[in-house]
Image 1 (tube, helix red, strand yellow):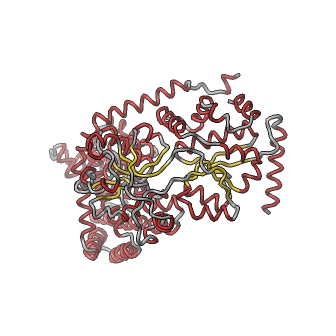
Image 2 (image 1 turned 30 degrees about the vertical axis):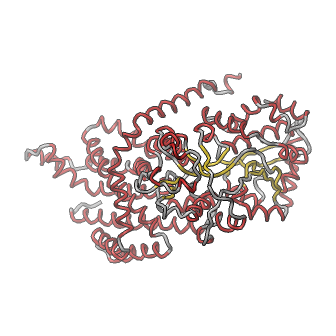
Image 3 (image 1 turned 180 degrees about the vertical axis):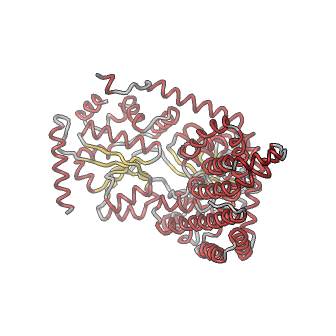
Length: 294
Length: 340
């Protein structure tokens, strides 16, 4: 009867040995390769620091101007331009300008990195069913595994700071852009592709001139999702020493500072809404331009 | 309404205990103990749980906690009933008030001996920079170039306390008091306990210098042999510490350089604990003092085996009977040993 009521469990000692073994192996790995991996990411760190410094050194009216300009270029809507400028002015007025710029810098670099890595992977997945089959579970895992779990190895490998934070954010934020690139290319009309093949397009030409342009609105939806998810990770990234709007939120959580948490939380929401609306509007515009209806 | 709920509740508890024949002790009821999220607090909470349950027939529930949230909840709501390891400096003023208003009781003024907060360096630092040996913080502060920051190598990195911890404010204010920015330092916010420990183990593993805030007793101090740094100045004054250094930056206009205040850790209980737990339970908490070296040994054990508080409590109770045997009555000791 004991067998039925008690789940057969690995004995305590071997379980402990197993856990210790895994830890030890990873520790040895990080001792051996940690410095090399860190050096590999140095250019990215350099870029990130430069961008943050630039954002902080630039006089605020110019930033607002650039932001308004970007909003206009993306959306062509006056309402959005005025809305985002006001939101940023409020963020600055409530004393969150510096943190906000740090967050904008990391989100920007993260988005660029996700696009640079994600779109090629998405294209590969679209071309080969085998790659797609092997990538899908990996993507599922990246999206569902609790972020604290991969914070530990990242910490052991790279310490604290901007780069480990960036990687943690990217692990969580990159899946949508990969998934939707794959989907977008797979959904391109078969007949259009046949037509291009009939004209003797090479594989690369087909990809560049037919598949990617037609998939662009879907890819763009993926980029939009990636930005949103990156913003959602701001607080977690702050737990490993990334400056920005997440730090005051952590402080607010441990001290029950209601107002501080609310202000910074709302600032993240404002950033998210601005980025979301601008990229969505932009996506809609390229769709309209191509005459594709949803 | 509350009264009715209390009556129903206590009846239920009573029924629960009478049906739990033999072990139950009419003197002890249901208690909630905070299990704070660091190793020594986990161990103490779990040892308390086992001793109070097996030895005194209490019914103990552990709930997760952390310095500030747990204190606030105990102060405002009277829940949980006990915090085995309350770092008192973080809550000095409100704790004094709560004690004078009889809402909270400091049941044990020193549950662990030989502890302290302050600034530390890793042994690897001394190996790399031999002249740092025996230097005070005041002297080390003249050499930011010894601890180059990853993000801006022209500045020295001083690793402070994670956002939201009581010590974060103290470190930020000391950073200003010692004019560290002018001397070429940056204050690194490690973001979380894991982040802070990560910087230490990474520096210790790679042999690079590390200078920052930490506290004892901890497995980190035991495992890596962290070396405490003398501040080189005396403790300035209670007023400077309580009304400036531990306050938010805007409430501390003129922080004075000072050594870290003497660390005080208490076991605090609510008025309800004294009532529900009874005299015996309170007496146990009063007597329970962990010697610093035993605690450090337990912490290293926990870190090396990734032991949870509950596992470590069993290890402690089975290995260190000579320590805990003195905290409890002979009868309780027998019952606890039998229950292990």
